[in-house]
Length: 315
Image (cartoon, rainbow, N blue to C red; front, side, top):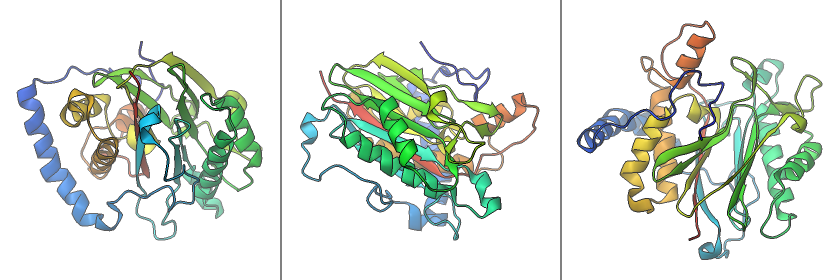
């Protein structure tokens, strides 16, 4: 069953894929015309901005990846803004606890002189710390988000999406706003989170301002997963620019027989999202959603882009 998101009204989440002979030429075209432009214009940021660099708590370097239920990696592309070199997204990965999360600071605070990225980074740092105190093999995401929310004192607000897989092979997620996740099985979309928004382009958001939302409105998800399933978690910079069909094609090409490298997948999908975001003539999910809200626009949506990819790692 696929949960249809409010942010993508009437968009088929499972566009039929073209035949194999056409898929490869299409992606070679994308790589040559889009990714090459990306490398020239954004060479300085075409690298994995590690969680340590952004000040988020991570697992021990000596962790045994073979025992991890979820193998994960992330790739972050902040939009070009000298005043905010870290951007407004934040994320963490706790592989030992098979948990990862992303937050997207709400840009509207900039007109008040507030960097909402500070709130997002503090929130994710507090979530990562709370995860460390959960019982082994099971992370209560509602409790984790509640605790992190109470501990976060920065100004601003952000969305939040956190996912985990427990020792019983059950996927859990909690979500506030328009960040979210998708689960793929055999490189095809299996399930996706729904978008929470008060109106078009105004997502639910956690914060300390009286107008902000609280964790009480967060949506929770639970479903059984299988070894080899791919979980993609991202900020709206991903979902606003890349259709599900493009992600499925990417997985077909780069996750052959379920053996694709998670870092390679995260970096490729992030770069793909960036290339679409810079295209002034492309048709993207954000433009489709705007149309259904009565707003005419074309082209991608320039934004911070965070992509986390995890493979469920059990038989």
